[in-house]
Amino acid sequence: MHGHRSAADQRLDGYLTATARGSEEAFTLLYDSLSGSVRGLALRVVRDPSQAEEVAQEVMLEVWRTAARFRPEHASARSWVFALAHHRAVDRVRSAQAASDRDRRVAQSNSERPFDVVAELVQDRDEQRRLYRCLAALCRDQRVPLVLAYYEGLTYEEVARALSKPAGTVKTRMRTGLHRLRECLEAGE
Image (tube, rainbow, N blue to C red; front, side, top):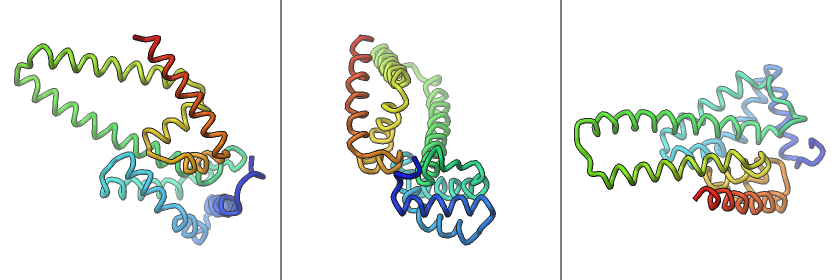
């Protein structure tokens, strides 16, 4: 896998490997190379510039602290850092959503809602559960590019770079994944 990486990705791999050995200079170069993209990925997930900035700072701090866990034989530095960023941003959204849900439950417990609103909420949750179940049923090679494209807003090329795969391979996997996702969702109706 390492032999197919671009010169830029190989350079980033070197920065991250040197960071793992404690090189502040390498970390600075890695930070300068990736922090903007990490912030952009976080912004696509959290949809709030100040939250995205916080997530990006947390991720880059985590990169500094956990660089020794990076294995260049398994992933490029770029995809490893983007995976950390994605997980951190999703955690931030989930945390905010949980707080919002708690607030909404409290507000709703203080008021009666018509039956049709309740039925609509139940239907929306059922559809969401079916979608998550069907996504989880996809193989990783199909699920990950779909999540990066549809939930993170990445283009085919950005997904391909993040996964260190050719764009054509990513497109094929996404097309196959979408077909299987559609079949799964239709079977659940």
